[in-house]
Image 1: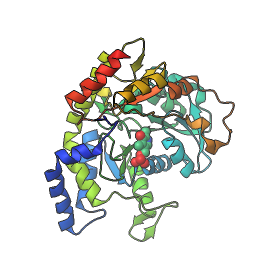
Image 2: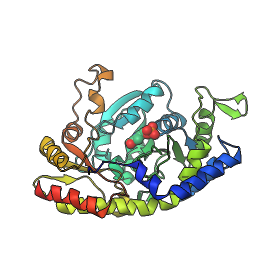
Image 3: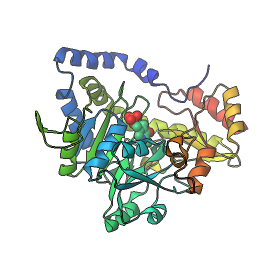
Image 4: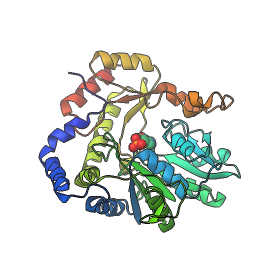
Length: 363
Ligand SMILES: *Cc1c(COP(=O)(O)O)cnc(C)c1O
């Protein structure tokens, strides 16, 4: 029996009765878009995060794009992002017509740091996207300070960090705006696409609300250019409401899995990329290993699936046709060659975790 990297089917099987009731409730309501489930989810998720506003949208990528535009980025503005985070922030910036540039990441956390950003900021930088990668919450206190001084907006990409907290303050409560994804394998997952923007700024929230629905300020009255349709439907909102109360418990389980892997992996082979306590929600169990091919081959032979998040750094993607040919991001490039992702989701059984640990210990 192979052990998958992720398996969104298992939690469906475990909670099928509850899910059926939730879906039935929406079917019977007669409201399928922007109805009561959506409104309640926005309030409940904002309260969970400890922010003033949550605006639900259709995906994490839309959340990033609308967040960037809502904090004041307009076509031609420059935005700084990390190049090791799957191109999502780059894609959102491109969709908003922004100029993308990259800063290197901190080699231990693999996230942007104040030190790495200091060199990348220019007088034309309008915003920075910090991705809390793999569920490791970046250390934002010094970044917030740096960006405040430079009048640059911080947008957090929390797609992999739902539920992470530092000094009791949630990932998503530090920036001008924060983007969440509810893709089916994320820590807080829908059964389809979904996303949200969190913010403490009423104007930012209002702009996202306009942009996600045709640019309307009120029905049929178009106030903002560049509006589109990006809404979270009632079924997904209802499913997310039913899952939100389980998020902290599931994150605890995820952390336990990576803690077991850490104990098993010999330090001569590599180390896991993780954070401390609640500042880590173990979205992915990612190790930095010297000989990735060998590690993947051995795990595969033992029936343990692996993945690579992410193999190609953004500045080397073919879309740029070499525009960043001279750019060197040593920590980013090293990570892309050495990261490997192991199975990590709350429904893994203790037996499966033990099997993965046995292979790790023998590496
Ligand atoms: C999943 C993900 C996204 C994109 O979310 P979608 O809902 O798939 O659009 C953005 N950023 C990061 C870091 C992600 O992991």
